[in-house]
Length: 106
Image (cartoon, one colour):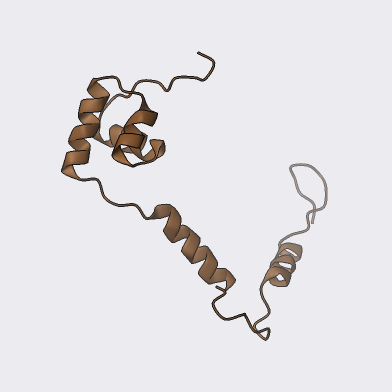
């Protein structure tokens, strides 16, 4: 089969599928006790990334107050025990404008 975009032969999906099958764990091999399998490990990572404690009304009020006072986002994050990404996301959801983060060389 020749690709119309570059004129070179394409390999299709067969080599990729065989490569993925070779990376999959052997079901006959015993896993050490307590070691998560590949699928369990991937599920645990997705839970860690997406799980966060909900914002309280008091935290939202504090975020509004600090945003009005032009407090740097890193300081807001530290005061609210959140990451700067969480602070930016919540401020955007609430329609708040945060000051730009100060650069180290400024």
